[in-house]
Image (cartoon, rainbow, N blue to C red; front, side, top):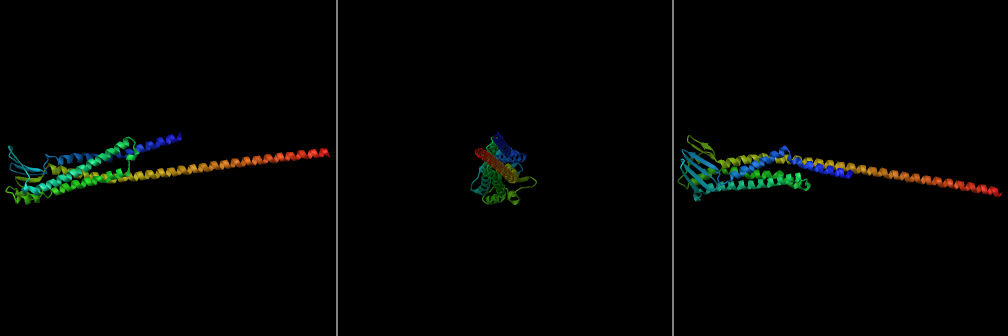
Length: 286
């Protein structure tokens, strides 16, 4: 009966211990990953532009596979990249590639977290492994690194556009004369929705990486403390069992000694009576 109670208690401790992954910090961590996942989808979507230029009714937008030119509200032209736009295309294709890599890593991370949550709700202790926890702890850094490279590469668009303009008759000189973001009285140039959403996703992944590193380190420390406490409790229980066994052995030895002493005294009394009887018979014979 006692063993059954201890077994139930251990199962309950394991079950409660697993739900340490569902605290407020982990909820924030998981939410940041989901938001980053959504923003990254928007970033490499085929309808999202990474850079734009506006000048008196003319709007030009760039993305990884085409350039869209809008003149007024009625005219719209779509141009694909040729050898005259190779540097621009290279910039945006590199940005999209690193964005997709970051997206893949976030997907892997979300799957690992869901596996951990399922393990907690079903009391699967083997899912709570060190490999899984270390993976969840450090994988966000990889995703953040890829997303960060994506926004950094896009900052080189102005130089790439300037190189392409040397081989083209249609150029907007303000883009490469100014910085990545700039404006004059009637002109504006700067990042489009794709770069902005990538930047926000990168910020979210940065904070998710910090939360992951420090929070999962605390969990590992708590696990080590719990293991040490369990070992100490086991050692204490073993010591008590050994002490109880020794006491039982001593009691058994004492009982055996008492039985031997009683048996010895009984034999002595019997011999004494036998000698006394022999003496009385001899006196009668005399």
